[in-house]
Length: 120
Image 1 (cartoon, rainbow, N blue to C red):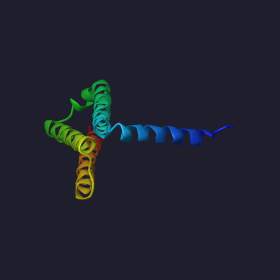
Image 2: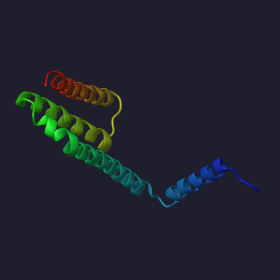
Image 3: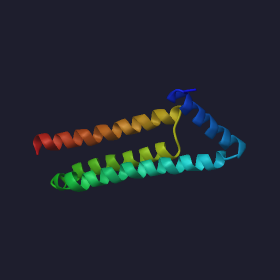
Image 4: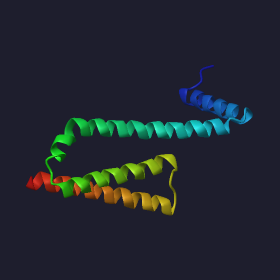
């Protein structure tokens, strides 16, 4: 008897879910989820740092001090906002605040960068 790959995958997921429930591993599973979210956030931060180190640092160093403060402040606030999203998770009003803060940070950073590219 041949089982389709979809059914086989669903049976594997059901077996793992049953194992988690029977062995009472919900706490371990939630801990692993938090660690995975933290690792994903750190991976994004590392890629962003390497991109900045290779490309952005020289260009941003030529800007005026005020524009540097605005740009780096927007990036720092965005990192804190994303950290809050990945670690705590957001819903309802918190999600609205998360998206408003992220949007304001992206707007400030992109606007500052474009103004410096246009007039610099």
